[in-house]
Length: 330
Ligand code: TRP
Image (cartoon, rainbow, N blue to C red):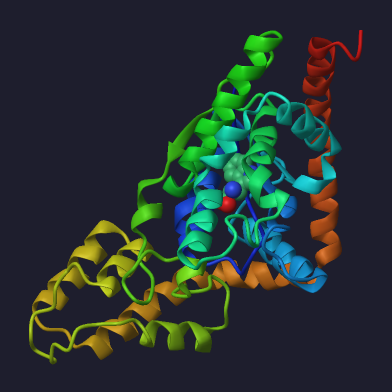
């Protein structure tokens, strides 16, 4: 059975972009029994950005409970916390030794920091720690430790999968064919899901709609969506943010109906109220589950512990092969 693996790092509250772009498609993949799925919370990847222990705990449980509330079934998915799988970090170190430094210099996130520093007349590596620099190697370890075939990710993560392949290749060439070559599955709608201001929905643009806020906050956020100044009665552009978001929550017929109303001059106020209605109906049952898990964190801990045991069983097999291949174990 092909293995699918993906992770989300807990660096903020889950938003609609995370849900439609990553969580929902990943859960769908896990439902038809066609794949063996490994989904995890990349807490050690979050260390590069988190400011405190409190933030780690807050975002960790937010993401963990989000996965469960959105329908992840721990009997169908190996669901775990990255930091529980010690083997991954041993493999990470071994991979460091077949990773050319130049490959890391070309990684997008690091390059963006360097470019920012250069533009601001700072030292090239100002504010860059080794966690950020080595980030792609740990991600390669996440993927390669389980013999992953497919990695569903957003377009922004494509380079990381290519790097994982390069690293796997370097190891296989130097030693023996231990690692499986992973491929990515790019979710189209990830790159196009729009935020409040019409740009891509992203934490870094501060234009997200949190998945599990209360109704009031959801309504407030939707009311803040930027529109043009067309008056009630004037036709609205179907390419607007509100229409794009509305479509996510309804079937094709309903989407068409709404688009027709926009073209016929539905007011922005009414359009926003209708968007709130469908979004809230969609989210409500999941929101209830989310708060249930948030209030029963010991249940979540237990689920993750069981997941870690299953994940570890497989990672140990890989680690052993690797240790043999490099000559530290017979
Ligand atoms: N880097 C990914 C992100 O920022 C998270 C991640 C960590 C990941 N390890 C992974 C994704 C392994 C897929 C596979 O979203």
